[in-house]
Image 1 (cartoon, rainbow, N blue to C red):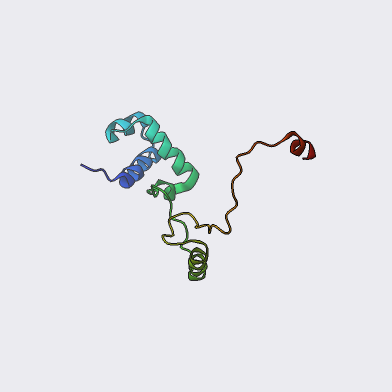
Image 2: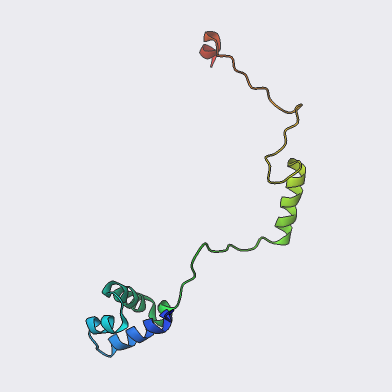
Length: 111
């Protein structure tokens, strides 16, 4: 059986505001004192709005506008070949060869 947590939070705070002891509220609601004080502190800091459910999970960012989407697509077409998930294609003419030779003493002294 799922509880309606938002209604329970409101009920708990109302009982406390009426002067009912925390221990009695917790035993009647079947919650820990730690949970009560978490909600009580949230109520004191933010009021009744602090007792509402908070969104969980990763927040969604703003949706990029159409102009930005078009620019990204153009850049992908310009610098990527084939599947846009793959790394950028480097043509053999533009590739810089990797050297595996060790630097000589004279080249180290010059630097």
